[in-house]
Length: 107
Image 1 (cartoon, rainbow, N blue to C red):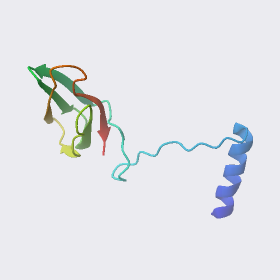
Image 2: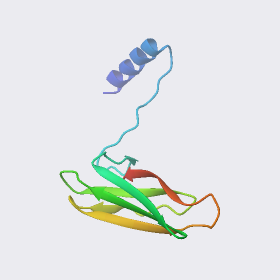
Image 3: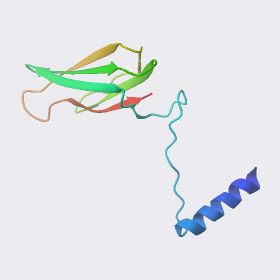
Image 4: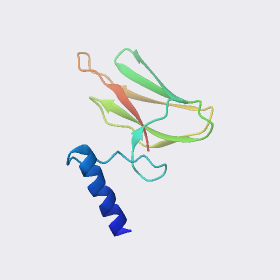
């Protein structure tokens, strides 16, 4: 196996001009986070000084996602069954920068 992996690495380096880059792995349940699938949608809104974000799962199965907040603490990893949603809120300052979800990640 080592010789095969080494041969592949040498071949890739020859093709790419000596630059070898790894693609990000996004295996389910591996603990590696990546962008949530497009069947999990994100909606955001404000009420006064509170920022709200809702993730809606329209996928064919349960999805584990977390909200990555700009200017606030990130959310925990949550299991969202098919057809369900979950909402997180963060207090917002009266002046910018105000919290918002910058990314919805799989976890």
